[in-house]
Length: 112
Image (cartoon, rainbow, N blue to C red; front, side):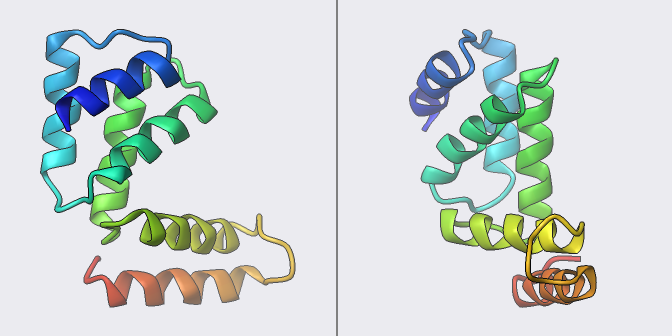
């Protein structure tokens, strides 16, 4: 997994992680029982966002997903869609429907 994170960072973020940065990212990833493919998705989402500090963004993303009960790529997709709905960004759904879906997702996955 460590090598996958290193390679994903280099390819998708055009950034060579320092040893310290890689340790911080791996600690965030290891804090939750994520499936391995979620690391690649987290790095890809970070690349899409193009933040000023990619490492901090990536760590925050993993922490957010982990805290919401996300463990798999499929759950991450469901979570992001529900969150988008809750923020009023998804078409054909109201914010209230999104909030309900997001709350149901979190309840189902044992998240606060």
